[in-house]
Length: 534
Image (cartoon, rainbow, N blue to C red; front, side, top):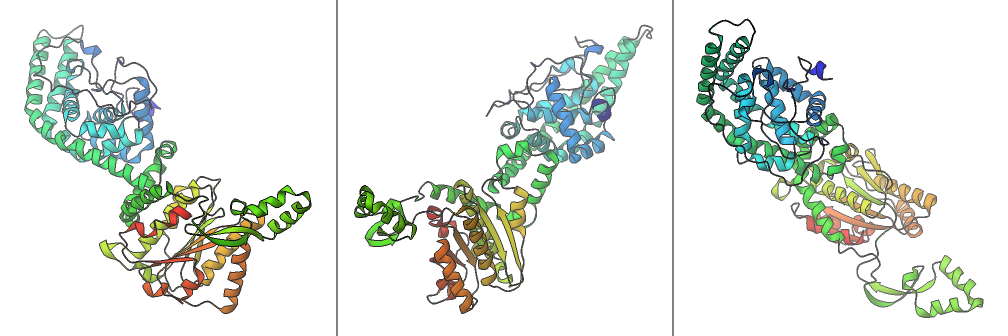
């Protein structure tokens, strides 16, 4: 692969190194929180160097073969890196080696610069750039984000592309002088050299050193903020991934191009604007999960009938001690006619599917405080419910609805990993049009009935998020109540920016066991108690 990526038997940034001085290690090994050892700015170059011409390197960062292979592979996978390499190397011979150095400094757990005198004259500009970059205030922060992660290290290179262009364009004279010094020293190293070859080589080396010295202030200025900008770019993307529930392990397993496409998708359009809200919803849900009620009965207010063995009154349990009455107990249990303690307060969590019915009619585009739309709040809540279902080992179904002829269903089974692309499709889809309750709720009933018939699992939860009112037929309502009694599901309603839809006697009020109004779309805690009981 190396010969295909670069000349001289090396891939881009191979650097023509004679040997590696680093201890071999696996490319993904890193030391959490490790900061690079500061590299001192080089003093003025001596006229003659102790390292022979044939032993000099073109790579400033010391790297073993594993690190170089990681660079080669990442370069091969990243179209953006290849484009940047082609662009800069067309104008500057040292550009490919510089990009490899920047990548390796960001990627390695403990990056180390080789001695300047070990470098060819033509690459001492690169050495000065790397020394200044690694000394810059932002580099340690960047390194914490990128060490051991090839994708993040590639991002670090691309985030500094503008600064690197400016650096290379501003140091052309130093680069040219370095090339001349290399040619002069090669000529002086020939068996049949000219009589004045050595003195010419010394003059060329001195000229190269002077040109590089003149370029140092500009290099320091350009690198001072480049590391901080790169760190911010890497950190922002990591936060964006976390907000959308993409974990570090999933990212490390994800192919490079897919990760790049995912990052681009999250950075653009509506999804980028929702990241902060979604992150706050997930943080709130995590906190409420710690207070989640699994089997708490609440305040005892009397006796009722049912089949919850956790709340059976002692007199019923006594029947199990009498052989003649065990069959009676079993029959009453099967019929749901056991005497149970009745309670008031938070109810037990469900066990069937969690279904979020999200209104995507035109009115959901309306903005509330802080510029947050009704749609954004509703979908952020739905995505937090997806997390909630997965934590509870429950299926999640997202139903997007609008008018009666517009419906889209997204299923996320509990025993399958939630594909992030599918999650984003759910978040991005907007149907538009009017509003119909019957179509999405009928679809939710079908899901719960199918689950009950296949697994005998009941007690599902439906969360209805809408901003509109609409009617349902009496016949449909009778069927709804019958199914609710048979399947034992609960319905939670969230009237998003629409207080009239939640008024007593409204259709939504008749459909829901629990209904509340959300008017401040910056407030994620309006739905907090749902995450203790769902």
